[in-house]
Length: 167
Image 1 (cartoon, rainbow, N blue to C red):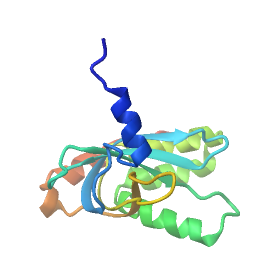
Image 2 (spheres, helix red, strand yellow):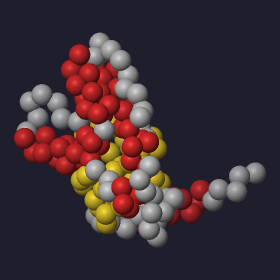
Image 3 (cartoon, helix red, strand yellow):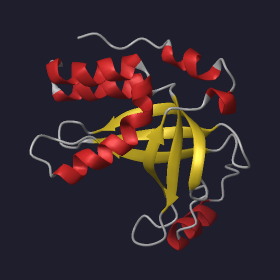
């Protein structure tokens, strides 16, 4: 018999009280998982981020990152730039982004980027949606390179050692 109370989960979802959400603010986060959402037809990568310090330490949140397509409005590129900026302090993320242009197919390109994002540490501005279908869920607003004083000297460089997929 399951100990999970699905009725409680349904009530939380209906009320927008999603148990994995954290209050909006700036957090040091580690990307513990990244997965493209149907890259043949979508330009979204879902990220599972773990809070590294503060009162929410140890909590995982799920956020998304839209990767602009050719022909998208400039706003899409601006928003992507804000979200990816902190990850660009890692050379393999930059390399994966460039490899997306020469990947054998769109799916492979998105998998390169998702793989490179996993394990990276960033300082992030996280919002908490308050209305609409996604009320009670977190959104990634912007990232920047983490401050090693906050994380400890070994944290950021250790994450950078992850290899990038080759094309």
